[in-house]
Amino acid sequence: MTSPSASLPDTIVFDDNGDLWLTVGPVSSSKVFHVDSNSLCRASKVFRAMLRGRFSDSKPANSLHRWEVKLPEDNPEAFVVLMDIVHANFDHAPLDLKPQELYNICVLTNKYDMTKALRPMATAWYQRLKSMCQRSKKMQAYSKNLFVAWELGCQGAVEEMLQDIAEKCHVDEFGSLLIDRNTRLINLETFRLIPVIDAITQHRVKMLQVFHAEGKEIAIKILAKRPICWHAGPCSAVSLADGIPKNSSK
Image 1: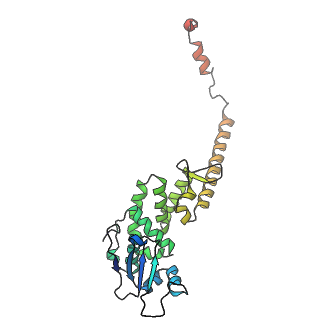
Image 2: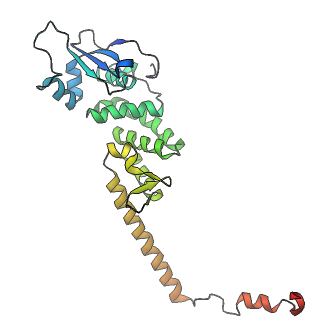
Image 3: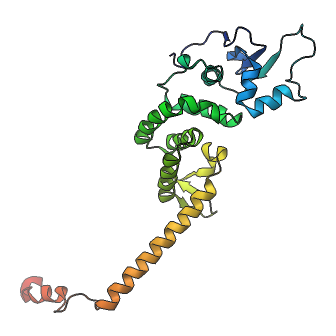
């Protein structure tokens, strides 16, 4: 199992009988992937629309021309892992991924609506994700782990992380949720990819309402049973003053 961060050859063949060549990444560092279009279409509705619909990326009518599609915005290293899974080359798919590598893969599955393709690897990657969540302290990394948990379908982890964020964030003068003092949640890529800000806002409001109600109830019980000053005898400050010699101020 090769890490996706290792140096990639210029051309990678995922299917010798494949009918499609994908050029992935920016021009300066792009890689060519020889793939089976049927496998890609089965895994992704987005690719099915691109390749089977009436778009410029659909298969050329003239069979003499090689079928090529350019994906300049995508990450080649992450795409390799995804193509190994799509073509059932599970022995090549790495288990020990770095946090950013796992995040990059999930960005692609989100973009191409092919999260279900990750199911064979989800359990192993979820174990990796748990250790990542425990070590992450900065919100930038923490939010990426939230996105990975969302894509892998780790409901328990998502709920726990959303609650944690709701407890830590506050609101600025414009009504935007802030974390880490001055970082707006909406400015973090994760919260532009998945629709959770409204859920965080609602949870935070409910949480504050509960805290307010509980605080009010405690205050009422205390004031109903005890006088404002809990000390039955003379005030401790007065007692202390009485014990100070009169000439001590001289």
